[in-house]
Image (tube, rainbow, N blue to C red; front, top):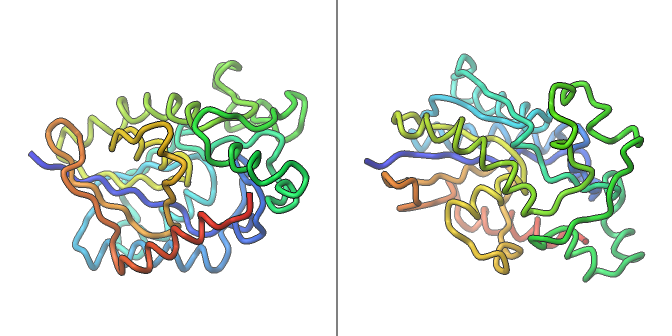
Length: 247
């Protein structure tokens, strides 16, 4: 029995537009990001794909993207589950810094490792820093040792997979169509798991903003087919724009 899974990266955020490291900092969508989110919903409607449940992170750019896409689908009433496990990768002390300036200071190779490598973490954020998640009320019920001071992609995979298995998989097994609206790195982590992408190859994966990525999964929950909705060349150009961001 084939099941459908839809992944949607949030639309452009204010800090995406400014080329800043964002991570867990809660920033809004730009006007362009709002349009991208609505366009994602339109593409789903035109493809005849009807989600049954929505999963988002607890960051407003993902929540807003899900809401806007659901408005375009006329499905604002769908149940929505939110989890910190779908949050963007935590960029530690880099959060809020300009990627080009960081590249000039540390060198583009080092910053590329911090951005895209599988196991290299960026510099840690001090525990007493106001930006640390330990000081954010939305994480107050989590055990302190779950809250990151920085993350590599491997860390994101490890904290995302429990949510995949416990929250998303049961719906898939029941024949539901989940829409997972999240972030570049949390979705890269999930795609890595689904497709079995090697650690050394994951740096080359770029996911465009606002373009639904649709998987058809077999009974073993492995992909039988995948496609971006809409114009394939437009999705390729959008992914290339992500790859070209400085740092």
